Structure formats: C-alpha cells, structure tokens
Length: 523
Image 1 (cartoon, rainbow, N blue to C red):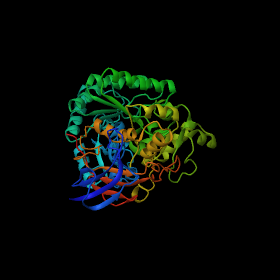
Image 2: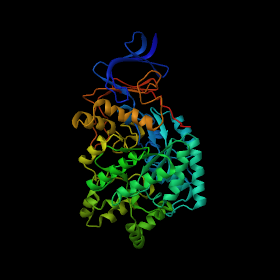
Image 3: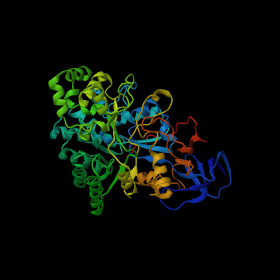
Image 4: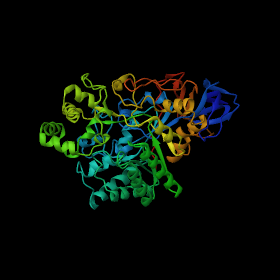
C-alpha cells in the first residue's frame, strides 16, 4: 500500500496517558491510516528510532488572534510541536467589532498592519482562513469585545437591554463556530461586568454545549473569592468551566486555597479544569494602568489626561491589574524601541534613576506611546517555582502559552511575548526530565488528549487509526527551551518533525514552508 508519510520505529505516546509502545505510523489523506508493523511505499519516510511520537500539542490558552494574520507560519509554535491553538482568551480577541478604535484595546499584538475590516466572528475566521495558518486554530468569543461593542468604555454593569444585545452577539459568534466564551475581569473594559450579566452570557454558552474560560476578577487580594465567583457562575449557568492561569498573584496560602476551591467544585460534580502558563511572571500591557474613561478620546485624549494633574490623580486611584502588584520593583518594562533608558528595568528602578514616583514614570511612558498603547509590555514577577509544581502536578491542570505566535524573521521579528517560544518545551524539560513530576505519557496527555477532550475534539489529540494526522516527533532527552527573560525570542530545540493535517510542516528540525492548518469551527 502507498502512504503519504511513514513514521517508523518511534516510541508512541498515543495521548491517552497509557504507557508507550514502539510501532510505525502511516499517514494518508490527512489522517492516521495504520499503526503497527507497517510495510509499504510512502512519499516521505521518517526514521523515528529513539524518538517520541505524540499527537500534536494543543495550546489551550493562546493570544495569537492577530499575529496569525500578520505571519501565519506560527514558527514559535511549530518548533515546539504545537498543531492547534485556542485563541480569544481572557476576553481579548478580534471579534465582534463595532468601533475599530476601541476594539484595538482588546487585541494583543495589534499594530494596524492588518486593518480590522470584519465585524463578527464569522468574518474574522474567514480572514484567518484566507491567511492559511500553519497550525489549526479555534477561537473563543471574548467578553472584552462584547462589552466594547455594546457599552463602549463605560465602567458600569450592563443593563437588561445591553445584556440582551451581548447575548445576541454571543449567540451569533457561537453559531458561527466559536468554541466558547472567555472573560478577563481584571482588564479595564471588563472590570464593570456584573455576576448577573456574566451568568446570562455563560448560560448562552452552556446551551450551545461550549466552554466558559475565565480570567478571574481579583488575582491578588481576593483570589479564592474570585475563583468561587466563576465557579458559581458556571454552576448556575450549567456550563463547562475552564479557569485560566489559576495560580494567582498572592501568597502560597491563597494559591493553595484556589486549588482547593477547584477540587471542592469537582467533588460536587462540576465540570471544571484549569490551565497555567509556564513563566515565573505574568505579562500584560502597561496600558492596563489606564481606566476606560482615559481612553474614550483616542491618543490625543490619553495625552491630555496624562498632562493634567487631576486626571493623573484619578488614574492613580484606579484599581488596575498592575497596580495590584503593590511593588514597582516587581513590574519590569520589556524592550521598548528607541527607549534603551527604560527597557529591561523595573518601574521601581526607573523611578530611582529619574528621582520620580514610579507611577508617574509609567504614565509618562504611556503618554509617549499614546499612538501605540499596545506596544509597551511589562513582566509582573509574582510567581515562584514551588507553586508551579503544585499547579502542574495537579490532575486537572494543563499548560498553555498565554502568548502569541511569533517568528525570528519576517514581520514579527521585533515582537516579543514571553512564553511564545518556550511554553511546551519548558513544560517537557521541567515536568518530565528535571522535576520528574509527570511520566512522559502523563505529560503528553496534558498536552494532547486532555485539552482535546475539553474542547470536544473527537478526532484530534490522539494517535489512533482514523484520527487527524497532527503529530509531533521529538527527542525526549533534548526537547527544551532556549528563550530567557530578556532574550525570549529563541527557538526551542529537540523537536524533529511536525505533521499538521497529514502535511510535513517541520522536517528534520527545519520548517518546510507548508501551511496546512485549518480554522476549526465548532457547531
């Protein structure tokens, strides 16, 4: 028999968590055609002796909504064995759009190089499909864009007519293929969301049989209560719950309580799981310091408010995500073009060097960057290794990038998002090789079969006959990350071959140029 690809003699981790077997895998017409001892012809033969063969990795928590339009090669993901990303997380995403100027505030990586010419999820997915991504993509419906399209930058809870409007937009997006609904309650555009409106929207999601993904309201001082809130919403709405980056920015006691709250809900029979990014720091836009009212007049309005002492005082009083960290030495500004004087320094250190209040230094930077508010990014150094181990050892936890796809050449060369080049490689290196918290088959399950089940994907995340041929072939001893805190844009190593929908996308560690990904619409 003739096949498209034959993968010979690899150690197969099938995605189920079962112990591996040594066998061959045959691929034909985009699917796995045979597993076992295989003889036959093939257009491409991969010698996988002494290599692991696994389903392609699934990134359950990505923010690549816009960068995949700019550069659909998804280089940073493919070299880590990633074959599917779930975008639209944390209430951020590329649809629905009513006011393009406002919508840009809730899109990671936005730079206006790709104009926002669509309105709904369907139009966005068509645009993404036309870009021909190298990986498969699913999207969630982002609450931030729902509110911006309905309330604009109003900071209050939605009224009944506004809730009805958002429910209509959400229904449209879910019917057009969105895999669920996401919230990011720490961000300015969503901070005013009430439990009532969130429950109404989550209920629409549950009726459609899709997932509710949650970046909780307060991940610092009231973290456990915030997790309890989304669990309560999901229970009342009768919807499957995915808690995003569960471990909060607080002490160990508060973090452990968040895990306990999830365990208690699961014990009551609630359908719940969680994910964690793989960094010892959070990352976000510096512009989250600004309350919605400071953004209503565009860049000119931002500069006007930041030049006014009374407005500055009001901004400083705003309870922002960054402000909640409490120590400016834990807020580090990443590389900012043309600003070597502040790049890679904490706001505390910038303040000391300038002899000024760190908060004012941050607001000065935002004034200078008013035309490109999405560009200044910061790291929040608020996590530690001990809590990482607790999270990733937990049977309900999956890793996610919490980042955008990037590339070391092309239009995204200068872009930076920590986790993009490192997340899956770090997970394998740390959890399997160094900490030995997970067996290889368990780690593969967390990266493949577990997220596939949560997403309702019956033909992905597994190596079995008939499944889609999304496959990663890698060295168990060498797969790991190269990126560091200040030099994150370095490709992972140890991944040898990646197949997406039956097409060789990485071959002998080199990108082939193939872009065979599919935009997956969940109906």
